[in-house]
Length: 274
Image 1 (cartoon, rainbow, N blue to C red):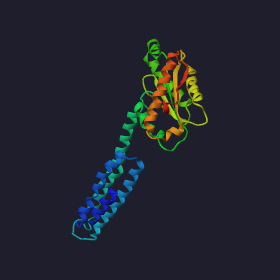
Image 2 (cartoon, rainbow, N blue to C red):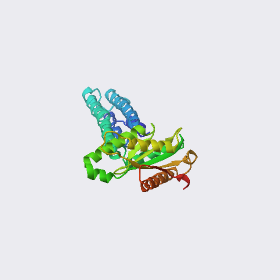
Image 3 (tube, one colour):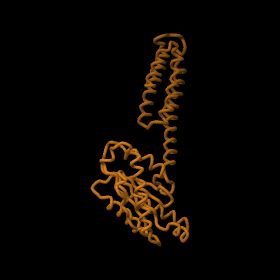
Image 4 (cartoon, rainbow, N blue to C red):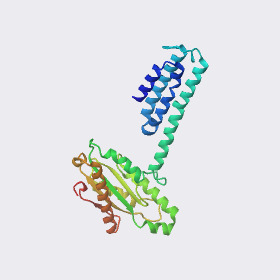
């Protein structure tokens, strides 16, 4: 609506040169679109801007509807206005949006494992908190057992390799639609919908995948905690707070697994009602 208002305003300006040069206001409005919206909205803004720039410049050249002599029949001036606006609209704005997306991606990702970090996981929770229910939402929390001794014995480079291998195993073993994140030093979380499997089966598969990592001089194991929020509760009010309770339940279950010696799975109660 703002783009339409800007174009309409400059079409009505009596001085056609001023109206054509006012197309730069579309670029100014494009700054908000670039930062706050995605590529589709930016593409719509760029398309409208190009049409508006062309229309305003044509009106300037032919002196319609109000001829003032400014810019009329001046192809060089028209080309300069078009070129300057097109460069900013079609080159600068998409480049700024790409850089903003890369910076945001870097801020939400773990640089070592390329998984989401905790901030990135929080940003993805919205898709599990809507009214469109796909199944029971679950959270699985994992913490590698005695990881400090692994670093002390084999060095931090080997510890980093273990974390990378763990991330790869979790990506492979987790259900296709699940979100996998590294939430701490040696802690990981998997969030998803249960579809035809029980939470015990999902959690056990993840635990087994870590234990069976090949090519390492030591067996790596993890304490695994899991919690489920039933789909009937998923559409209730305060869904986001319920999901944070779900994380708390999975985390508590994971610490219980660690207290039992690790390399085991503990399933929490229904945290939606706890």
